[in-house]
Length: 110
Image (cartoon, rainbow, N blue to C red; front, side):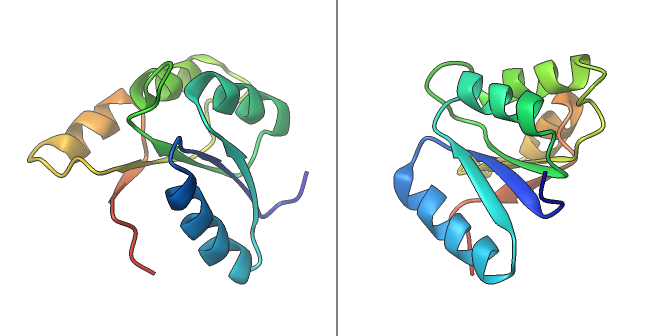
C-alpha cells in the first residue's frame, strides 16, 4: 500500500473530484467509494493511513461506517476525518463520540 493513500468515502461526484484534485496535487493517492459499504470494504482491504468520510451516505451513513471501523481491531486505529455539510452546534462532538478523530465542514475550501 502507498503510505500516502487516502480513502475518501463520498457519494457526491463533485465533492470527490475537488478533494481528489487537492490531495493529488500534494502527492497523495486517493481511492474513492460512493457509499458506506463500498468504503468500508476499501478500508478493510487497503488499510490506509487516513480515511475521509462523508456523513450523509446513501446506504449506511458515515457514523455507522466509523462504528464498524472502530469495532474491527485490524483497522480501528486508522484516523477518520468526518466531512459534512451539517454545521450545527454539537456536530463535532457527535462525530467524535461516534469515533471520528476530527471534522471538516463542507463546502471544502482549497
